[in-house]
Amino acid sequence: MKKTKREFPEHFLWGGAVAANQLEGAWNEDGKGLCIADINEYKGNLPPEKCSNAEMTAVYARELLNDHEKMFPKRYGIDFYHNYPEDIRLLAGLGINSLRTSINWARIYP
Image (cartoon, rainbow, N blue to C red):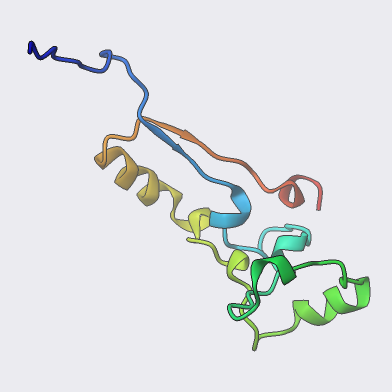
């Protein structure tokens, strides 16, 4: 059996993708408005099919803003907002030459 050498084209884009609410952090900085991800509490013992924001009201949302006991992972993400130069450098070191990301709309329209 003859083996065929296969290579990626010279200008192949090795990339990744991320979403702002999963990586950004800085949830309450620089005039960013509130979004549902900022008050989406992590409930590790709750099955995914039971997770819902249906009970969210404006009053409950304001209460959650001042809650420092519960876990809100999307408030912090990987703190890309503050660390993006280093994060991009690390990705480049892995050979990533294309990155799709998003900006949280609550930063544009607070």
